Amino acid sequence: MKNIVIEMFVHLLKACTAWLVLILGVSGGGWAATLEEKYGTVGRALEQLWGDDACATVYLRKKGVPIVSIACVGDYDATRREKLLDVLFRHHFELQKESYRLRPRHGVYLYKTKSGGRTVYFKLYVREARELWPRNPLASKQLALYVMNLRSSDDLLRWRTLGIPLTFSVTVGRSDTAELLARLAEYGDEKWLSIPLEDDNTEITDGELLSIADALDSEKLESYLSIINDVDGVNGISPLYCSRFCRHVPALRALLSTARNKNGEQELSLLDTTHFAGSSFYQTAKIMNFRVFTVHPMQRDFCSELSEFINLKEDNIARVLAVDAGDEKALRCLAKLSRQRLLAVEFVRLSQLAQNSLLR
Image 1 (cartoon, helix red, strand yellow):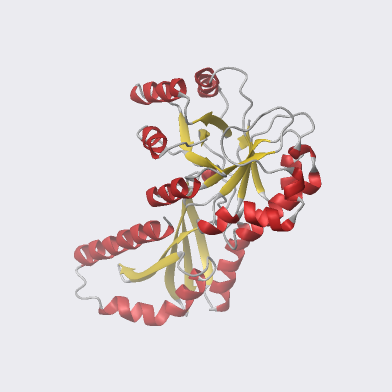
Image 2: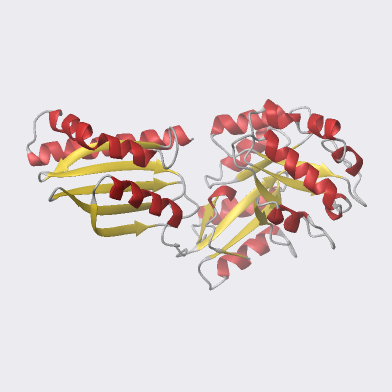
């Protein structure tokens, strides 16, 4: 998905370059090559603020003024902005003016600089960001739908036909867990795991239960979470059942630590789907510095909860609703509201929730 977004930016920037060539009557691309030779070191240094393969840069002129246009996937917070300015200053560019346009998850930043008495613009496009500088309040409500317990590829197809962003989870321990996660990856969806954990009341009917004793046995826990290695990492995990397990902090810490290690360099987010008295899932995850969300407690049926959220008057609020993939009534409700264009909310995947929005 990241490569697709970057390619999109590259095509956009190249299209802008071609347009400028036509409008300004500049022939050939020699001037672009000259600009890259002159400013390429700075452009590459700025790209590295996001790491390898996260950015693309195009060099162009507008009315004779050099513009270094950089498109990146990832956050742009105050820390990264300081690093960007540091790169410019170290290469002897004086900042004349900074301007920007922001949306909840993307932004465009324009830096007017001077170097050797000459004006040079640095234009930064940022996409797929959770954090933008300055902090960017939402102008609307955000809703992340967490579709749990995928039981077949048919479930996945039926929910995807709604045409809205969704986050899907697959239960650990099914015979087709790896197959369903692979299908999610093929479709460009996030890969989430629901982990059945030892519970006071529930007799597990789907997947493989992880007991407290097995979580405290490193070899058994490694084997249980081997699916993370098999599918080349996941975006996040959530507990399934777990009233007993989620009160046991050592078991929780062992589970979360092992899952993080197995996920390698890929960030692992967590969703607390528990509403059990005494559950330590959320606090344990926060203490361990995970990005963790919590689902909204379902007091009524899904459609009523959705309607309530749509009708809230506040802005800059977000909610996570969990729904079973087999809930046909919820599926029909969403399809009906989508057709009637009554949804006054922005649907996002879990990873795309604005980090500074009020989760409620």
